[in-house]
Length: 145
Ligand SMILES: [Zn+2]
Image 1 (tube, rainbow, N blue to C red):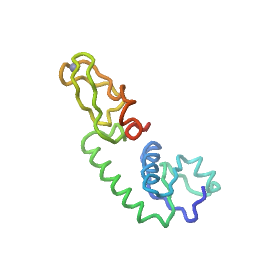
Image 2 (cartoon, rainbow, N blue to C red):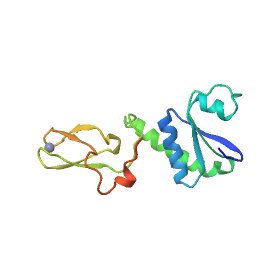
Image 3 (cartoon, rainbow, N blue to C red):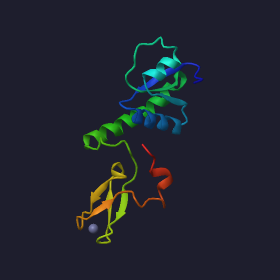
């Protein structure tokens, strides 16, 4: 923790979301870190702060304007996902193509369903979404949330 002038850029709803946002900021070239819970905040600030119940993402105050664009973009996509009823997962990315073992047909599932079992739209057999990744798209598309 070596920020010159730390600023709490984002109050996340979960540790997972905090790390997601932190990753977005880091990806945009913005120094960022996650403060996960009360105990860590207490250690970092000498235990002098009131309790903070939500994980936060901290950045340099000088990076606020740049971070604001990233966070605004994230919020818009998060809102879109919530509106679409896909708030069960924070995973984003291109659709996952699955080849059904039963009927051999390919179908696409939202990236948010990565790692879940869905039914084939053609024959209704169960298919593992994302189970056969590891070829193209694995490096950039399949982060552990
Ligand atoms: Zn099928």
